[in-house]
Image 1: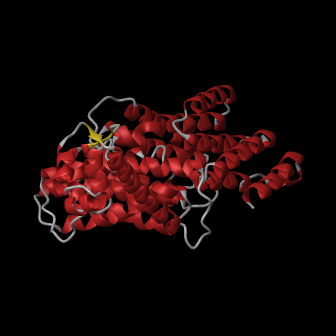
Image 2: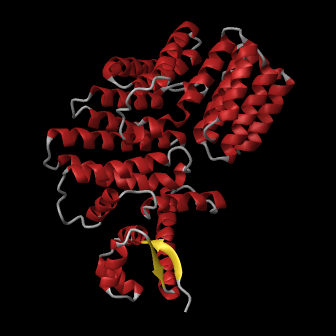
Length: 429
């Protein structure tokens, strides 16, 4: 009988934990002895399976995938559930990659095993916190590429299990470390909810991130939470139309003051976000000053003190492109159209993901609108909306529509604007 080599002991354990099964229950499901499952899980390398065991494991995986899809669809209610396409299926599979621990550490698996037995009170020790740090890093790595419509329900479930752990007895340094993890998870949920245009969910988790960070003496962590919260109010991702830009700037100013002892990356992305808001308001000098601060922060090579979502390795994946897009926008407002165009082209060619490309199209559209170029502004608005609709990026669509709402009223009779309005009606209907 042919043997199949595909599963590893770690993947087998992770699948069992995803099913919330004990070793005995998992063994009964597979039709094998408990000692066989225990032996699989003790072996870190790829294990050798008979075809019937392979098939049973594949069936178990399919059931877990169905459960994730069900949670994804339920999260969209009462909105109509869309037909699942290949992109969603790939995202769900990628999400399952976290649960199946192909890139998650043994401490993270131990954390998941403890969560699978909620009747036992958690013992918060360094290994437990390290496990949650690894899980948080794995979730944070999804921020760049996963579709938040499928990823968000799973992350919300994790956050809701994570938050009560802060009430458990532990040393102060462990509480600070755990608070940084919980703050990052909540901020990630809040920003994803902003991308999906779910304001109530966004406010709940972003404000919770601020509240959690205030419970420990970690000013850089408080600065990161406040910076994330500022996005909820910023008019920059809304194309300058909507939000509460003054409150956004107030939060960013407070965050910047708290970040004086933070790592350079934190000060860099806070300066980038503040420059974006200043530029959107037409405050060119203030935007340029913040861009200089962003350069110093993002290009420095000091130690990264962020944890999980706020670490340079996860949150920083596209921050330089964001800064460069804001700089190109600011240059356009200052009248340097040639340099602005070159820089926008450079950002487009290096965009870390489609969200960055859509946001940059919004920046270009806003720049053309502010300097009185309806043809070019219309072309970029149309591009941003088409990309946003195709990739289900609600905030990107909102940014483009905000730019259109800010057009000079006299442009309403310009042919390209009339054509754009009809195109937008068709795309967003």
